[in-house]
Length: 209
Ligand code: GDP
Ligand code: MG
Image 1 (tube, rainbow, N blue to C red):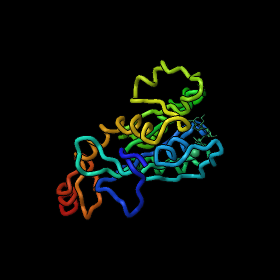
Image 2: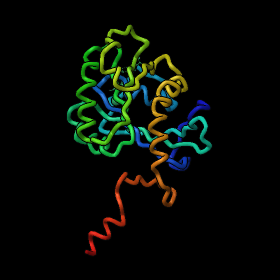
Image 3: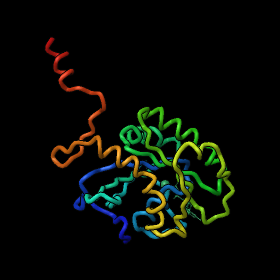
Image 4: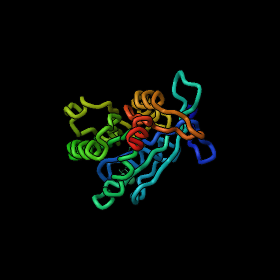
């Protein structure tokens, strides 16, 4: 297990929770990347994801004393699971959209995944792109304009260590962590997201007048 982040369980909760969702075409390497990043060995015989699965990491962000708990959701890219993924996308704090660096079509499809995520979660600004399988010859066009619009990196679940993958992906999410931490208030050890501009006094006033 790496020193940068270690896989957690329900008992090893950090103080702050972040919900981060992997989406992208089937077969691009989402599950393998997540499993490797959270401590499993890479295997070519990975099982297709059914619906939604999740993993935890406890992560120590530089310059912060409290560890962060990252809850990653892994989705199936197949059409029939998209409606299930919709509910998760709506409540995600950040989205990781994956493509296969060895598969140009999956890079071309990033646009429709991003459009769909933005349609489902219009206030979502926390989106990063991860190109998987970079141990294979890179045939996707990495100068594609979509990659200039979002933070992105490439990884290999086969050759990178868990720590390598964490070092490549997690810093891209630091702005997300920082801005959410600023807007969260702790209530009974659970973070409560206060929508900006919502006024509880305003709500009460409307009801009684
Ligand atoms: P998902 O459908 O996006 O979750 O994709 P998977 O993680 O199930 O991977 C699909 C296939 O690609 C599997 O056979 C994996 O073993 C293989 N794969 C995943 N990541 C890598 C990688 O980094 N390098 C190589 N060479 N193959 C990979
Ligand atoms: Mg999968």
